[in-house]
Length: 268
Ligand SMILES: [Zn+2]
Image 1 (cartoon, rainbow, N blue to C red):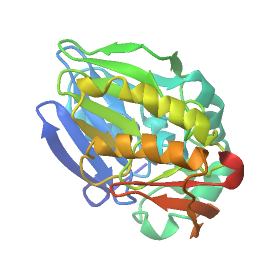
Image 2: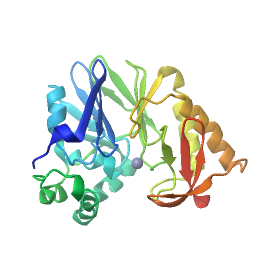
Image 3: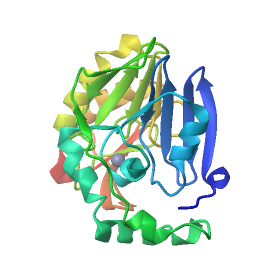
């Protein structure tokens, strides 16, 4: 497979040993390096060579963990061998390695792929069997530990990762400054999501910045407080979103000051 990495990725060393990797479709991955191992958080679509990029940033062995099983986070998994996901999203991830599903996905990107990109190779790519992580699992990278915090809601197997060395929460699609999507087929109800973000909030003293799966910049943890009180108000019927047309059909959208949530009547 040939890729043109320079046009696809934007890489910033956010802190010493923490790289913020964003792609041209608006998806973020993060590489975190310890003294003995590195951890890649999500892989993006795999439409450029993230394996090669990661290899140029770290010479240590790389584990890959997925914040959840959606295709924009797992479709580059085939470029790595040590994969970790929460078991509830394993099936979802595997669905995005079914040839027919990948053919549909790649159609959306035909216009932005580099001319030497091999669609056939991408469509037929396979992954190694992922290991499972659950709440409390620690990735010990050597002088840097990341703890798994379960956060079911956006998907059943969504997780956040807490880096206690640099006080960062990697939130995937569970906490964003953009709308949190709770209107998807794979989403659980708002009540489950509320419980989850209250649980994440119990670690609030341990981080001062959130790096999400789709925001261009670090996110202020205030989004967590806004979502906790806002989602609680929606559940209690005190406030209600307005109907918006989204890529995933009509949804109710409620805009808070620093974030927003999309949901449906039947996903409360
Ligand atoms: Zn997602």
